[in-house]
Amino acid sequence: MTLPILQTQRLLLSLLTLEDVPTFATYRNDPEIARYQYWYPVTEEAVRDLVEQHHRLPFGTQDQWFQFGIRLQADRTLIGDIGIHFLDSKFEIAEIGYAISPLYQKQGYAVESVRAMLNYCFTSTPLIKIHATCDSRNTLSMHLLEKVGFTQQLIRPNAIFLRGEWSTEVDYAFTREQSRKNP
Ligand SMILES: CC(C)(COP(=O)(O)OP(=O)(O)OC[C@H]1O[C@@H](n2cnc3c(N)ncnc32)[C@H](O)[C@@H]1OP(=O)(O)O)[C@@H](O)C(=O)NCCC(=O)NCCS
Image 1 (tube, protein in one colour):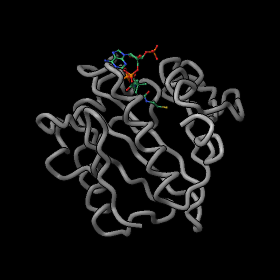
Image 2 (cartoon, protein in one colour):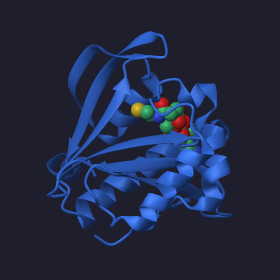
Image 3 (cartoon, rainbow, N blue to C red):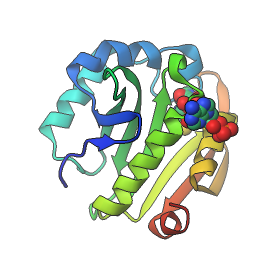
């Protein structure tokens, strides 16, 4: 698969670079952003490792996250990220995760980014199913997933113990067929 750069009305989505590392680590370590995330605290070193792997491994490598920066088209400011994790060797199933910096939330950027990633996955790759997993208290993320067409698959009560609290996980999925009905 060729490495995509996705363009929407207001955004450009392209793989994170080393220049993005400090900004990424800053907003990802904001307690509100990190609240339901497993990857916390985020060290600049770990982000640099991830970015370096992006350049070493072919896009689509199984069991690897590829993290895209979400950038304003106007001035290329990094306002968030959306990652895709390829789960099988046939490139048919993947999961996504995302975050938008607090300064840029509630402006429709997450919806615009997730829709762009889904459209890319179902039109330009062999992917047929995309998963996303949320903590059941993460109502903003659940609302976003349902808004773009994901459906709930499974609720796993007390699935993991995260920073001193049990987290109930909700699994969502969106298939290629659903994307045709809900473009
Ligand atoms: C979940 C998260 C990504 C949502 O990001 P966001 O950028 O605020 O989401 P959006 O702005 O796209 O959507 C939120 C609302 O803004 C509204 N909005 C405001 N201005 C808008 C505009 N100019 N254009 C379009 N929508 C606009 C949207 O309509 C939407 O509300 P609605 O769905 O009730 O209609 C964000 O809260 C976040 O980063 N959370 C922390 C990380 C996290 O939990 N990630 C998920 C892990 S599973």
